Amino acid sequence: MSARRDEHEAEDQSEVLNADDVGEEIPMNDDEGDVAMDSDTEELIFQNDSIAFFDGHADSVFSIAQHPVYPSLIATGGSEGEADDAPGKGYVIDTSAAPDRPVLPSSYSGADPTKTTELDALFTIEGHTDSINALTFTLPRGDFLVSAGLDGRLRAYTVTLSAAQNPSQASNQPAATLSFLAEAQEVPEINWIAPCPSPEYPNTVALGASDNSVWVYTIDPAADPQNPLQVVNSYWLHTAPCTAGAWTPDGALLATVAEDSSLYAWDVWGLGAARGVVESNGQTVVSLTGEDQRFEVEGGLYSVAVEPNGTYLAVGGAEGHIRIVSLPRLGGGGGGGGGKASASSSSSSSSQQVSAGGQILASLKTQSESIETLSFVSPSGGLPNQQTTLLAAGSVDGSIAVYDATRRFAVRRNIAGAHEDHSVVKVEFIPGTWLLTSCGMDGVVRRWDLRGGSSNAAAARQNPPAAAGGAAPGPTASDAGLVKEWKGHRGDGEGGGVLGFVQGSTGERVITAGDDGVVLVFEA
Image (cartoon, rainbow, N blue to C red; front, side, top):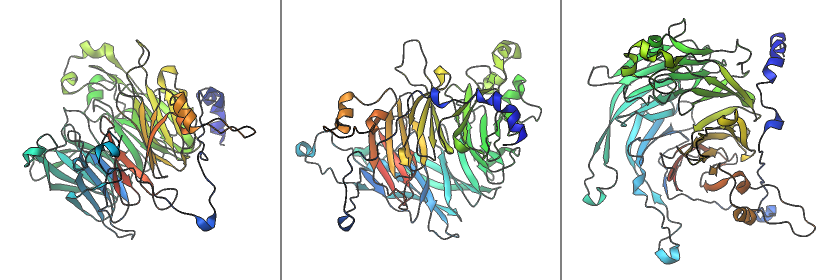
């Protein structure tokens, strides 16, 4: 440890949660229900819980996106082979072709419970010379599909929706037609893309690149048919590859992190400047780097998420470190708030609501390895007159930690081994609920109810009392709040794992991107 870190060790210690502060740590019992198996008679039983599948990819599926208006319209992207020069390729599919599983048992309904539907591609995403590792539909209406690749290309496609030709399908999703629109290539590799949620700045996306840069584009073919991909801004303050980015809920600010342990909140639309909270560089409203020992995360930052009201954000990095940082209030609503209308309002009427950001509110460390994914939610149905905000963090060590922001980020639950000893790839709350969905390199998708564990009866079924003279079994998944899991992908280090999922606003269906080259549709 450097002398500079020693000087701040005492100061930092008060900001990091100690092990004694953990409210609940629940190790998963991997041995539950296991049966000894002789190596000579080993039999592999493959479990597939999906209701539909798409297997058109030739190799890993790295990215997946869902249309914001018609959630059954799904885009997937990946690589067309293991060779270094294998091109990237993607597909657009319609999952509404998969019928719902019957509620009644098959003995009543006559349905085949094992039948899964094979899905066909509606459109092929081509033109990338390397893997497609990021996809998104633009907001708010999904007018465009954008693909990003390790070849540095950003490609945009027009999405046209028309009424279904079959009258019997009138209540389902309209027919979709896609066509290539434009391409831009300003960087060597694109690491991520994120759509701007503001309806005042529609069809805008941000990206982070391997050359340390951040770019913002607006897609507007009506304004310039010859150049529909218009650069809004580019930023170059990171000194290492930009690993993740997230917009504030109102789309006023863009937060990005990088491998150099830096965080910047960009004043993309000039709203911070209009409120007098932009920093001296004229580009950011929050700037934190590793030069600040309170903020530094040796090994870099790899995830970022913004609280639902936009008042603060969380960044996650190496060795399980999380930092909570305040965002400025720009007036006219929640944190980061403001739009074109509010930016033009008089400064005297909004000055009372304006405040600067950039304060480190908390430093958290419960997990042992890198935090790869973060998700916030403000669930309904909590205590009367009390708003609860939860933060979930998924780690490479296979654990999920859940923090309660209303209790100074106390650990609400630490699910050790949530995905055994395999990396947690993504965690995401169903909006407005206590339900968290996760996926990992074990090839499994799981859903957790964070109001508490499963009922005592369910826990007893999965964790029966020990027989006389036997050792009591350890805590089970039900104790951790596990309510459902879906299997179907290869995992456990066997060339598989789940690299991402989408679940819409209701979580009724979960569609996955598999490292085994398969896309699966699961029904909750």
